[in-house]
Structures are given as structure tokens and as C-alpha cells.
Image (cartoon, rainbow, N blue to C red; front, side):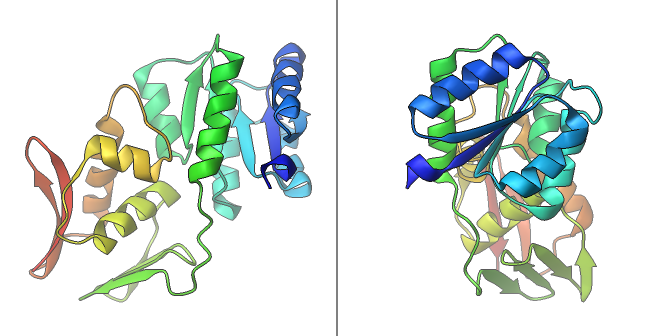
Length: 227
């Protein structure tokens, strides 16, 4: 039930945390807020939220490091909420595993809508057989591992999810917008270069073979081609 879902709010401004909490409580969410970055990961582990709203500029550990620490142990949705609105900051946040990115000042109703949308689209990876196997490559989404020529390849969650999604829909072409919508769980309005960056990094870690590879379809997007 959505009324039982929990949201952890990490922001150093008490007025912002109380405002967000007020609106989310009205929508039936349980909330907890933290004002210091050093307490965020511990609060995440004890509160066990369904979603995190995360500021970047915090006393103690910053939002980027908190995001990285959470991604080591969980794939639950993270919405970054920050005054840092440059494209670079947005791309970095998404690369580290954030599912959405909002810039302050923000509209509380829009944030609430995004919380609902991200939670609605979030699907925990609980299928024991959620893996794709092609010659010399195994992508396992149940334990977030990639085996390439018998070697384990380290990949951040979003890179692995993007690779898995393309490989599990082999030979099908997807636009950058479709990939953002599917992997990041929302319709990202703005720069779609984050997909290009992720594909570039995946290609650096796993080179295409005679049997498969991530292909660029010029003017459209990408596909995982299996011959």
C-alpha cells in the first residue's frame, strides 16, 4: 500500500524538510528527516525507506557520497533535490545512481508528483532468473554482476541496468528518451547526454565481439545487436 511507504528526507534546511514532510504526510507517506550527511546512511539502514530525497550540499558527508554509499547496499529510488542546477551536476548525480534530479527552488506539488511517479515505476529486482547470457557475457540483475570472458566487471547500478535492458531486448532500437524513461524511472526533460556517457563507459569495460555489441543507430539511439 502506498500509505505505508516511507520516505527519508536528507537536507540541512529544517524548513525544507518540514515542508516536504508535511506534504508527503498528507499523501499518506511516512517520513523521517536528517539534517547532517554523516547521519544519512545510518538513518537509511534503520528507517529502511522506500525512497530517499537527497540534498547535495550537506554538513559532513555530501549528497554524492551518500548516494554512492546507498547504492552499495540498495537500489531503492533516490531523488536529488539541490541548488546545483548545472548540466554537469545533473549528469553526475544520475551517473552515481540517482533516479531523478530537481533544482531548488522547487514546487512542492511537483516534487510530490515525482515521488509518486518514481515509486510507481520502481520495480524491485526479485526475479531469481533475471539474467541475460550471450557468448562470453552474463548480466545478472538479481545480484548485480557482469561476467565478461570469465572475469567479473565492476559497474555502477545504472550502467548495469542499462546494459541488461538493452541485452534483454536484443536487436530492438531505443531512443535516448526511452532509455532515460525506462532506466531512470521518469521522463527526464533536458540533456539526454547521460545515456551517451553511460554507453561510452559500458563500451570501455566490455568490448563488442563477433557475436554481439551495443550499436549506435544514428539519429535514433542504441540497440544491443546479437548476430
